[in-house]
Length: 493
Image (cartoon, rainbow, N blue to C red; front, top):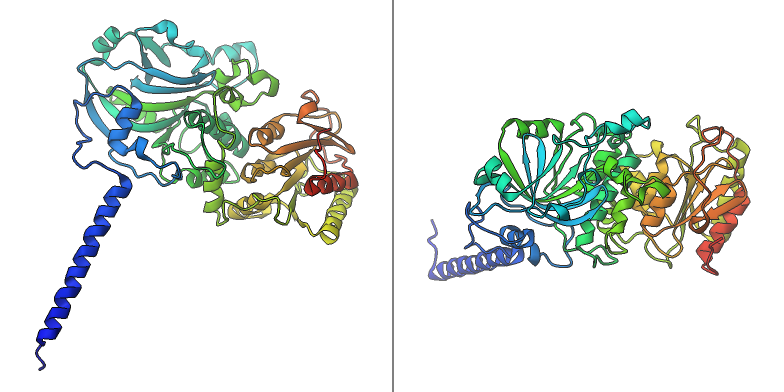
């Protein structure tokens, strides 16, 4: 048996020292990266904080999140802990527009939301912040059922809060999104993604008006999203896009539903939420900005924000699908035209001959101009394929319908556009408003006649709106594609 030599021993000791130095540097680097002060006890029950931002900077380094952070890259820490009050905290209303409010230090007990304020005159009307969660129906007696009561939200003084809550509460830390809507619209791809999620994120993004064109933001992702009126079985849509979008946009965010809200309520405990982004469709409908477009999220756009507010969400969803977030973002790349066909749906379809003419005209653009042309039926593609093709698309077109929700994943550029086909005389704001909200050009079509966002017709649903004989001038559509993609002139008829 060969015994190790002195030279072998020196080599082993040297290697061990190198490994120890490497491990020490790596551990130091990791702590520096997360910028956590390990001397701070984040479970200190008696800690007092003047604001959410101060609290968050201690517990998770909120103010230290670099401007280049992606919303999916922030680490999480402790979720809930008991908090004792030497002085009753008061609720701050950080941002508000009807239907969308950001609260700091919002209380909940027995299912009732409490705003603690000694200046109730500074608190917006409760009916502009919340509702009963009753479904949206139009008869006056049904509208009345949506009005909030004292079982939904109350404004109380700090003295009343002390008498009601005592001197402690269970702290629910971080940012919580709260969707106070019934499942009526939640379980629909467009209404979930382009209204509810749109409004929540647009409201939250008002806290970072410097989101960059590449989607860099200082905002940490929400810790949780709460649905007090929607059960865990009611939020998914038939195409399974809701879960794909939410899980890819916010991979670290937990979900709580009606059952969980009841569970919290039935503990009869007092909860204090660090920060809540609160959304309520019925409250939004009472605002002045809702009526012109009848878009739930329209009120959120009264708040300050970056032109690139949606980019962090778009980037996360697109990258989760396997596509680079920069796809579709250059005016120098080969243009991609995607016609989303509904010809197999049985309703809201083009005339068969007009469909064929449109396809032929678009294919000719492919051979004459070198554009990439895709003729797709979204329901025939996987969810990842739907996201990837939308993320690369320069011009998306199709008859009014849920598949046009894919425009959310387009990358806005001066030549990016959405073409929406209607039966002549028909129009609704759904996709026009959504396209404009994220910086896309929009053109509605009635056969050979077109209109842009600057000259929209009134909302109307003629008898044939949902029919299978919708006309379209395929040659006119192809000509506008060339004008947009050539960037020869501004097209704004």
